[in-house]
Image (cartoon, rainbow, N blue to C red):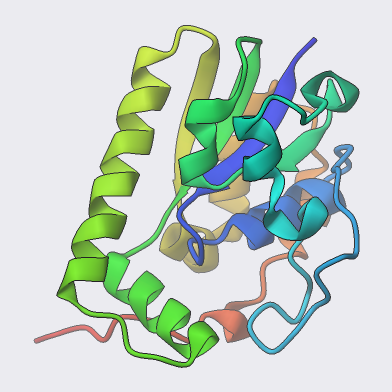
Amino acid sequence: MVNYIVSGLERSGTSMMMQILYLGGMKVAFDTKRKPDEHNPKGYFELEGGKIINRLMDGSFPIEKYDDMVIKVTAYGLKFLPKGEYKVIYMLRNLDEIMASMSKMIGEKLGEEDKRAFDKLNRYALKLLEERDDMDYITVRYDKVIENPHREIERVNDFLGGILDVDSAVRAVDPSLYRNRKKEVR
């Protein structure tokens, strides 16, 4: 059995991808412990308020319960996934945009040290995906999904084996929620 994982740094578009997969017809595992808010008005689409990493770390998260379903596991949690068979959609987003979004969310400005830590975590997670032989993965850039949702969702659908209703999945993409766009410098 396959476990489908949506991953990436926090604020990288993981909730949007979960919504895409949900509207596209996949079985998506989430609960309502973490309510939609101004940061994610369509919801977070995660389990246990996003705190499954602790349960993955101590081995108490029942991953087998979610065979053939999609779950969200942020970048740090990937290293705690037990051996299995995984198809991972890893979201990428400009680090300055992630920093701006996270700063708004937590109510304090993040600095260069934080940015270096996020960059290091991102590189670590991508290296882990490359090295683990039980993980097949695709990277998806947040800005490219906003720019051309149909093309990017087709890419994801090809990776998943053609199981999505792409036209329905595209409805999850709301360009108005791209509020921390990095300004182009000319």
